[in-house]
Length: 563
Image 1: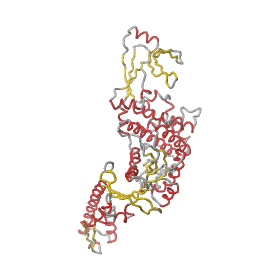
Image 2: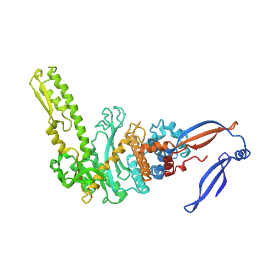
Image 3: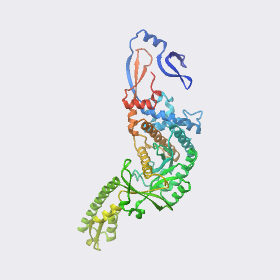
């Protein structure tokens, strides 16, 4: 039933609203509310007062931010963080609020803390997060970040993971572990950030200091449940034991038992010591072994290969056998993929062509007597040219002469050797597991689920959506906090994508945020010619069918303007 109610503000003014009430969970609640205005404004409208003049309009970012905030509220980000780090009496906002704001910014429009206030003013967010301008100063963010220790972050991540699993009904029986690193712009002379080190840069920025990040995500939706930040100069294989130790503790807390857990990881984590830790913890696993380390498996005749599943994995065949590796004998599934075979063949042809071009340049130089280098130096250059994988097996080089002026080079492709190499290696993978009763198709599906965490890393390196960069921090503590809320941003983005997927909307994170960003808020400012301030009228922009479905799916009406 609709009724008119009055609300008295602190300045004594009275305003009227048209509200509709209903029972929610057995209790009376206001389910809709429409602003009518003051008594004078209502009287003017009833008397047919002339329309006020539109003096200007504003456009606010609404849909993407509101969808993100709906997930932040659903999983209780602010609440959980504030339970671990209570708000100080003199703080402009709680630590949980600051981290939630930083997380939302990472997803929607990544920027520095210095630029945050300006960005926030262009959004509809100030309507549902009531903070004054001073509270959004970048130094306030830093003060909040300073209160979070490494154990605090681990506690918060554990509690958030438990809430997410319960709220979304995540299947945690299958988890995927992988690691990457991110380039930073921290000065080489900065000794306050030992976590940022030069190493093997996966973004190919060997000139920059790196921060390493390990993630454990669910196969169900690729939702991060555990993160591990480490110095960028440390190989992934050295961080695997620490992550397994954290995983065992975390998963035991979340699920109570490791019996149903199957962990998926790639061959980059392999070592006898690492695998002994997995076996000791009695964790189910699906990994892989380098094919070249097991030549006996590669010689198995093609006639023994059987199809895996023509519907799920067309062109994929296998041999189900055993192998002794990493100190144990376990089930091995040797697979051959026509698609991978063709891709490796094309790639190898390109590599051979480049090697031949470089060798041709060197041969021409030697033929003209334009070198003073001794034979060992030329042999070293030839070895470098032939260093890429498999090139030396298929490319025959002959260097004649002893003195620089007499050196001559010839080379040719050994077609028979190349054919033998292709038959022996191309298209093959060795999957390694202790899930002896699983169908082969399930083992393959588990191993291929690594693509989910790899996609997450690529998403974090996208400069526009859910981005690790820009990172304007230069101490270990702040870098760890930055990494924490960046991973939380990835978690929320993937929860949004998973929710949309379950509703039949098969969109990527970028596509989803673009669709949601198309739901804008227009503010029309009217003035009646008097001395008062312009009156604001807020409207949402027209929506496409997809945007309307997303609006309803994430209950964006909770954040929509009422007047």
